[in-house]
Image (cartoon, rainbow, N blue to C red; front, side, top):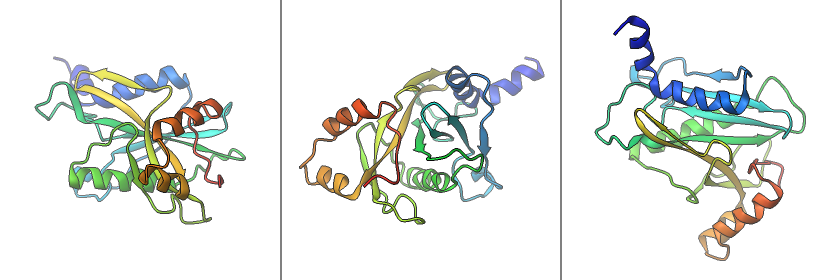
Amino acid sequence: MNGQESENTETIGWDAIDKILKKEYGNQVPQHYAPKVYYSLGGNEPLDGISIYVDIENKCYHYITYGFSEIYEKETEDKEISGFGFELTFRLKYAEFSENYPTWPINLLQNIAKVTFSKGMRFKEFQTLSSGPIRLEPSTEIKGILFILDPTLKEMKTENGKVGFLQIFGLTSTEYQNIIDKKTNRRKLISEELNKNPLLITDVERK
């Protein structure tokens, strides 16, 4: 094995994500967030990276995580599943494009990662989670989230196992409570939303 192959082996999960995103966004170079100190080296942010792409046509930022799955070499015994079996994505609507993407979604994704890593939670499609206000400033009615398979990235198989791309969709406090109280069927809610919002883009201005 030469040096180049060895380097590729160390990032086989990461490279697999990059390959999927290249198919989706072509040669667009995303902005990328990485923690100052990696979790494995004592940092407090579990995710090693979050890439942010811009979808000009649909007026949204697309955040994709690196770290819930095994982005480097295979470490777990389950050969069918890579790490926790998923990476998270989030599509955020913007009124006007700015190269200075909102950073609060990064905190949201890292906070979900902290729960996942500390409690070993594996989120699944159609699962809900109470987030409180999804952002603090300015105020928003979006106070819950629902996990749904990313409409375009969906799932992939890697040498480390299967990875599903779970997208976060923001729910208003009323929508979230109605799901919890079983007044609203979550699958029906998403089905209806897909008719008008096929990429399930979260609009934090939504009432």
